[in-house]
Each structure stands twice: as structure tokens, then as C-alpha cells.
Length: 234
Image (cartoon, rainbow, N blue to C red):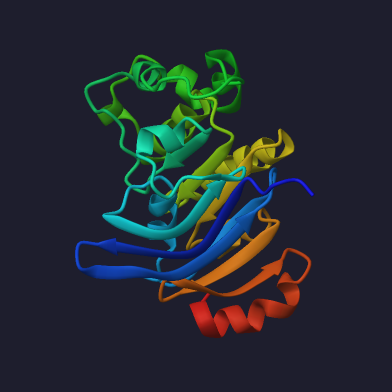
């Protein structure tokens, strides 16, 4: 059996004295799209950050394609082909859109070129010379995702990429996720917008109090809607 792209076991995490992850466990197969569901503060974003070593302290196991990384620094983990798109986007305001795209280093082979990026995000081609501060919220979100595709990352950790955006932009992002899935990318998404996430994911994982409480497949979703309404308010 092929190794999963990402395997988390008994993961605990802290920000200072605050214990935020309480035995997280998650397995993500190569080419799979998984959505982490949960209320604010449940530990979903902390899980993504912990995978890349971006929280204060971690204990447990995080394996990337079978390689244990729990003691590794962030830059070394990223070079296994991981890309993280944070909720705050992290656009460099003083740089143009294209300069933002060209800034990250190549992490692995198979990085998307600018022509591929611009074919996927035509808005970015039109705004290539515009400073980051002059981009709309939707254009900034497109740029944040496009930037990690330039690195060659094949495991994408996407945190609330649809939040606060106009429906037409959300639809563009949904098309992007579908395209990346078809190209064999592995994606873990944190999403509050259930309408956005529902048709895109192969599997849904419910997180409460820093641990997984339930998980189910796309095929099982219709039978879980009532439970999700009660648990998440979706």
C-alpha cells in the first residue's frame, strides 16, 4: 500500500502555555482533497501551522510521505513539497503582483510557470505590474494561492481562502481547486464556507477541542448534513 502524503498521529501543540492541539490524528492520501470543519478556535488552523512547524511547540508524529518531520525546522519541511496559504495571505505590499509571484524559492520540480499561473488566474496577468496594496481582496487571495504553486509544492495547506470574498471570486477559487485536484495535487483546506467546500472535498474531518471527532466521505455527506447543522451551525 502506498504511503499517505500526510500522516498525523497523537499530535499535541502549544502557543506558549496554551495547549491547542490535544491528540490530532489525520491521514491524507496523495491526490486527495480533505476539508477540516469546525467552529472558530477548534484547532483547524493550528493543525495546518503545526504541520509546517509554525506553532510554539509540537509533540507527537507528523510524517510526510513516510518521513518523520516533528523535530524539523520549517524550511526543511517545506522542501518536501509543502505550500501554506495563510488566512492573512501575506502579500508584500511594496512589490508588484508579478514580483510577489517570483519571490518564493523553488522547493520541488514541477513548479507552475508564469504562463500556467496566468492561464489559471487571468486577473493576475492584467494586474502583474500593480502593487500588492492596489489589488482587490479577491486578487490578493488568488495571488497568495498562485505564489505557492510557483514553488513546486504538491501538498497545499489552504486556510479560509474563500473568506470575505464576492461570490464570483469564490466560484473562481472553486474552479481552481477542482483543476488542481485533477492535476494530482493533494489539498487540505480549512473552511467556514461549507457551501464552497462541500462539492470540492473527497473527505470531511470534523475538529473539536484540538482533536478529530468525526470524519466521512463525500458520498456520506447527504446523511451527515443534519449532524453538521447541530455541530457546526452550517
